[in-house]
Amino acid sequence: MRNIPVDITSMSFTVAGEPEPKIVDRATGEVKRDAEGRELYTLPLLPMPNDDRRNPVITVTFPSADFPQIALGSKVRPVSLTCFYWQMNGRSGLGFRCEAIRPEKAA
Image 1 (cartoon, one colour):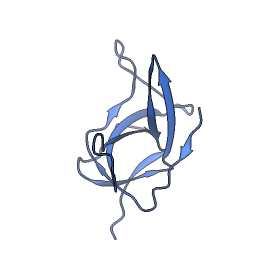
Image 2 (cartoon, rainbow, N blue to C red; image 1 turned 90 degrees about the vertical axis):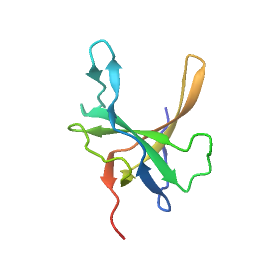
Image 3 (cartoon, rainbow, N blue to C red; image 1 turned 90 degrees about the horizontal axis):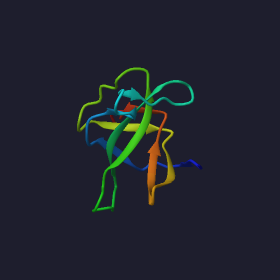
Image 4 (cartoon, rainbow, N blue to C red; image 1 turned 180 degrees about the vertical axis):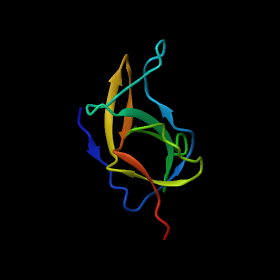
């Protein structure tokens, strides 16, 4: 799977939902981990500008040492945002990952 870097220099991101752990097994509640052993979480973000009126929100996966406390509606910056194509069971789409979610610096 190829990760494609996303240029976000002229974009802003608003948190559009609550962070959630990425679950491996719903029966046990085990949280998925990356290659370095960090737990993975997902966060819905609204990128601006955005011309996709059908689905303007993207869900970004990122690692965190503990459960992230990120307020709904806050402005954030995904660090090292990448995009990848996935395909499974006749379905396909684009996924997004980053190394961290940081608060947007005030202008």
